[in-house]
Image (cartoon, chains in turn red, blue):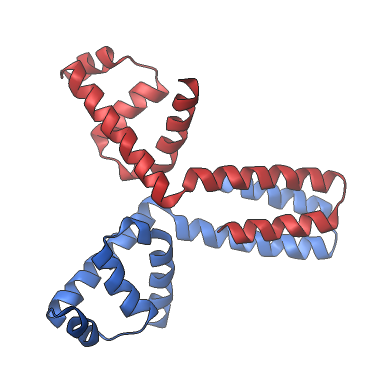
Length: 108
Length: 108
């Protein structure tokens, strides 16, 4: 569950600009501010079920965007390469650095 | 006009997965294969105007996605940093490389 929350936080971060204001509000209260479904329902004067359905649909949309654009996956890949770059820099491994720069270029 | 074509090629490359199959066909024939509006209209047995309208709408959608997700802009920014990394590597500028790695991390 924690893993799903982390993933949703990232996907929300990458794709929130593609959501409607209502979707953004519910997702941000639920995932970032840790509100319960009941608390969000009360805040917006709608049923708990309506909030639940909206969030489930939004989660599916975020996964769909990720399937199409892979922004989270590429971010993770770049992060690994950047960490390896720092290590290569510490040990002054010029060849390794050249390879890692190339790996970043290919990733685009 | 050439500049617009190049930009549209890039935007299409980044966001084509978010388009419908028909949008993808028209855009790819028009921008990648250099078909005229008339040739596409003939190919799909629709009016030239219909093809024109569809392509204009798709172009606007691509610009809208770019405004929201900035994939092309970030790609260009990363490209500049990667070029500078190669130069820094050639001159063995360790400090400069460290700065550039940091610049890439911030860009995410």
